[in-house]
Length: 65
Image (tube, rainbow, N blue to C red; front, side, top):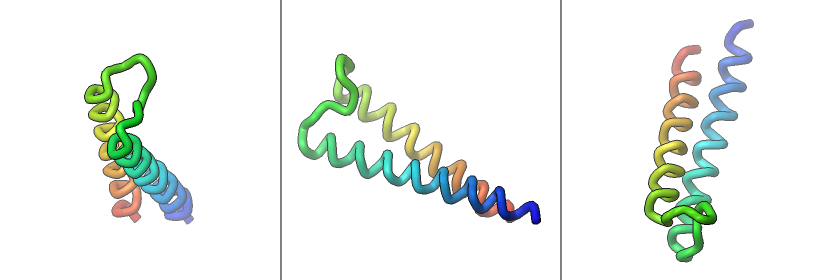
């Protein structure tokens, strides 16, 4: 019964982290800004770091079933 919320949270975190990582990669490849008014390198690095952390949280949730 308690594994349902863990599965849901893990899938949501994994989907968000994956989507953020793909979106950031596409923006960087096209040379478009990841965040307006911020250095492209800094914003891409921060967004990629956040995506990897969120993917890790998703993996953690899914391994704790």
